[in-house]
Length: 98
Image 1: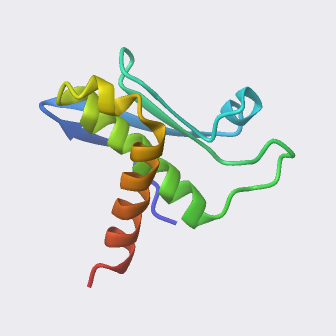
Image 2: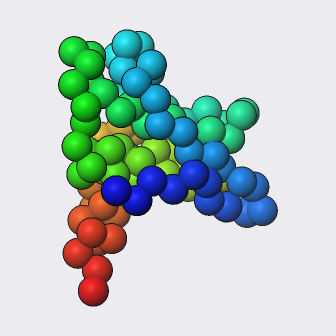
């Protein structure tokens, strides 16, 4: 599985971490703007590992949050339904790109 460790946007480096700790908070992904960190859950609440597709889709969801945050689209960033839809679209585009 490809697990990126970081990427850049507007000259800022966003770090990507993978952890089983955030799932205990009820989250599968988390973007922390101040620390510039995305965390993706590796396991579910029952400590079963997430599959590659789930973790990739979660990462893309969080990347949408990053994009909206850095472009000043704060109202859209709060719309989880839209963020999830865009993350799923991005996941499918990148997964099927030839």
